[in-house]
Length: 133
Image 1: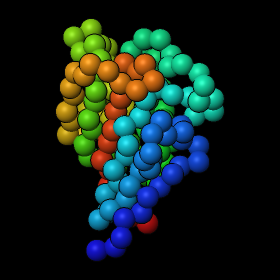
Image 2: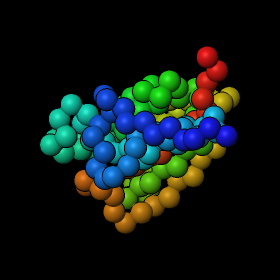
Image 3: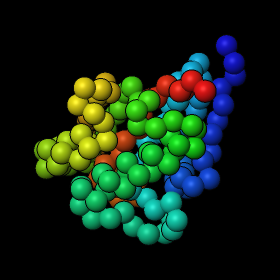
């Protein structure tokens, strides 16, 4: 097995902690949880509301995946963390289905949490597979 590759993606948001955006190992891409931070101006607060934050998170995930040579069509597992589960779960799901075709939905876990970094209300991480060249 090849050694893991640790990707720091130039146009993805600056990590809020000591980690890589994506770690590639054994043909899989492990994408670090993304918040609704702005990749162009890290000092900006997250946008208000679950809809805006979810869209921004997916934009950041798209950047991380693309930097490792993949896209949403390569995602096989998603984990979602919500600080207000009851309030935001339905709205998140309405946006979520825009990113994956109905006949190809990744495996998924969604959990409620008490707090996320930077005042976020949603964080999403993913596992994808490396597309063949």
